[in-house]
Image (cartoon, rainbow, N blue to C red; front, side, top):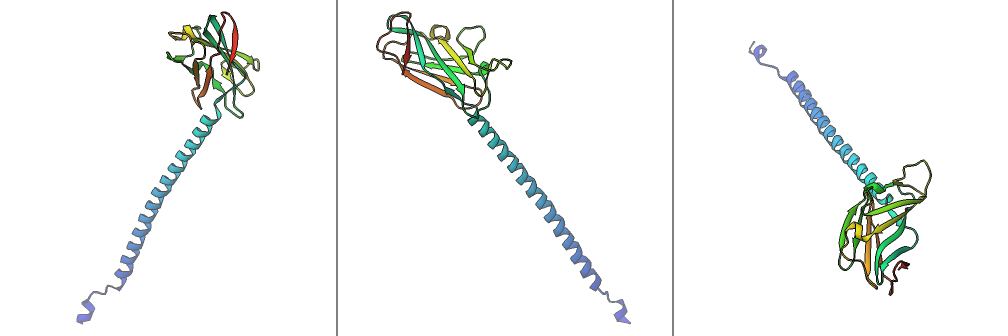
Length: 194
């Protein structure tokens, strides 16, 4: 009769094993959900980085043609003209948001575009009518004229002096143009520089 009152725990062992198994499955499911979420987040960030890199690499400017200086008086230039186009497959560049930097032996000037004309100006040369005139798009060509006295240069570059122009679009690579002034500059004349 004593045996009838002894607890038989065979059924509880199976129930405990099931509870432990369910706990492991729940923990594994939560852990895998967290890991998948982190993986998706990482993948999304990587995709954003790739798209940003492609946008920045594809929206740069390229020089198109000669760089020409105009002499204001003998042996000094006061105006620099150059042409830009979009690189092959590049996205449009907003010239209104572009910054120009001019450097010579005496000056380092950075100037944002201003429609008031106090600095540098751009003019579409080859473009599709009806499009935004401030967007340099594929197949278009723009002329940029920099009047050095209006952008804030204190002195005009002289003969044989090196100048550097950097055109910085809102996105993409910087277009850097480094040229040397000619050995003679007569007043009112235009000269290509190399």
